[in-house]
Image (cartoon, rainbow, N blue to C red):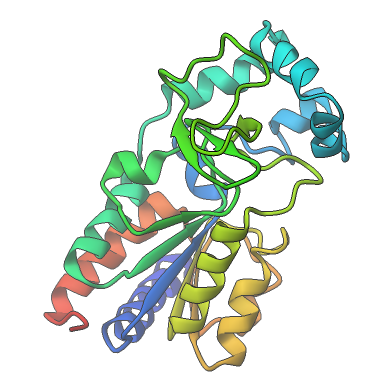
Length: 264
């Protein structure tokens, strides 16, 4: 079977599964953002491949001296300029827009994203849990309140939460930092609800996100993989779209339109 025939079959299988599902959740990884020009963290061309991975105890170092961490954060950091520039310049690609359209049409109920880039929101998606945070937000480590980074007063370091006076950090999750309780609870809630999970551009190797498809599958949910590369979960999927998300998801939307149905 040729790759085009295999993709066509996968699209038909995926459209059929989704059209008969009641609660579809998408687990999204870095692969979707690579198509928007954001380099991955690991692998060829990865930002950490070039400059080295962050220290494993990054959160502990923050907790030891939040003021020093913020002072360093607010200073110029040339080694991160390429990545930050890519984030600033990135725009939602066809895959992001396709997922937003799936949500509007009733085919997609929730997105769990491992990305921090805010591109799902820019594309129009609304039902989103950001398990690793959002680069455009700040978060209180005491009460989990979140604030837009833009316009937040940073004349005092470390900044303090207007709600509870707790220490505020960037919303993005550091190495060694627990996943915020509210985000983790949301991920588990939607995983338990789903009867179909769409795995988009994720290596399925970063925990705790990688456990959600396993939990869903054990509860009887169908898995659909959208990834040009094979992953550890490929063999457990009921449909596989072996193509970049920017190609596969718009095609999937077309197939779903053809079914003429959406979950009630």
